[in-house]
Image 1: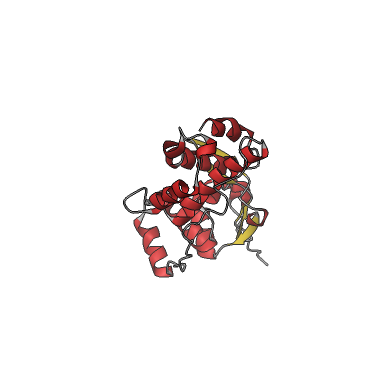
Image 2 (image 1 turned 60 degrees about the vertical axis):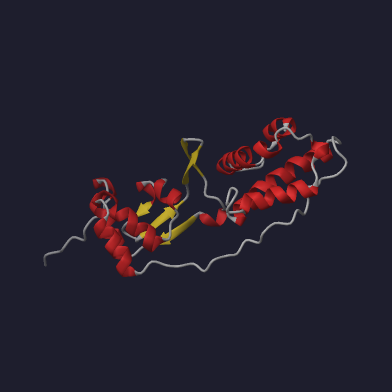
Length: 211
């Protein structure tokens, strides 16, 4: 699909990580199927068969949420072709797809979290406990700097995330403005962090006065 190669570089409203993900999905699951199909030859029957193949165990066996992302990218691509008057209508619009069923979240218990912390390589013990009790995402923990760890007040300040974009790690803002936050952490986690903190980041112990 030559149009995709013309249209995709003009898309400038996506986060770098989202852009890399969508491009990878599209090149892996849409271009092999429609790469030689002219825009005017796209039809609903073929498109429905394609989405079915994406989610079928005999096909790509992708999760409904992943299928939706791929179809959304194709929809935007073809809609842009309509805007540029290359075709008259968009056959991808409102294409029926399997619904995304939200599964009930499961939470690790205190016992399981500490068991994991005791079992894992001890270099990552504090990392595990911080994630478990602070609720930080993996990218947020990987991007955390000591300047944003306040052991005295038992808080960490989340302001960055680390993402992998086509094999290259880069720092950037969290996904949403609400993700920039100050997170309280228990004393036990502070103790683990303090054991590995640089000397200049450790809170001073209170001095005893002699009277």
